[in-house]
Image (cartoon, rainbow, N blue to C red; front, side):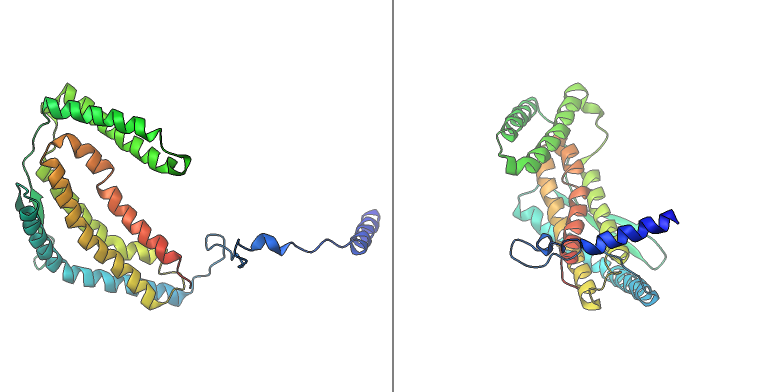
Length: 273
C-alpha cells in the first residue's frame, strides 16, 4: 500500500514537472547534417537469403580467381623480367612449381637475387642513418605522432638487425631468393582469401550485389598489381645487402599487403547503403 502511494506520488510529480526536451543539437555535425548511428552500434538482422547470397558470391569469386590465377602468374613473370631490365637489377626470374591436384598446378614466379652480407661501411652507414632518423622523429609536430611511432617501430627492427649482423652475420639462415619467393607466395594466398574475408565482413551488409563484387574485384586487382612491384622493390634493396631483410619482412612485407585489404574494406564500408 505504501509502495503504491509512493509510486502514484512520484508519477504526479513527474507529470507536474516534465523533463526538458532532448537537445537534438548533439546529434548534428559541424555542417548541420544529422549524425546517424554507426554500423558498429546499429542492430543488424541477417536474413537466410542474405547468407545464401553471400556464400554463393564467395564461391563464385573464388572459382573465378582460381581460373585466372595461372594467367596472373604469367603476367607476374613478364613484370619481373621487364622490371629487372628496367631497374638494372642483377636478378633472374625463378619459378616455383606448386601442384595441388593432378589437374591444377601453378608456376609461381619470383625475383631471384644473390644474398650479399653487409660490409663494414654499409653497417656503419645504416647505424648512422638510424640515429639520424630517430632524432628526426622527435622533431615532428604533434599532428605527425602516429607517423613518428611508425618510424620508431621500423628503426627498432633495424637496430635488432644491426645487432645480429654485428654479432653473428654468417649464421643468418635466410636468403634473398627464399624471402622473395615467400613474399610472392604469401601474396597469392592473401588474394585467394579476399573473397572469403569480405564474405564474412562485408557481404552481409546491404550494399547491393554490384558494389560487393566491385569492391572485391578492385581489392584483388590492386594486389595483383601491387605485389609484383613490391617484390621488385624489395629485390632492389636486398641486392645491396640482406641487412634490410628483417625490416622489409616485418614492416613492409605481408603486413603492408594486409593493410591494403583493410583500406579497401574501410573505404567500402563508408559507402552509403
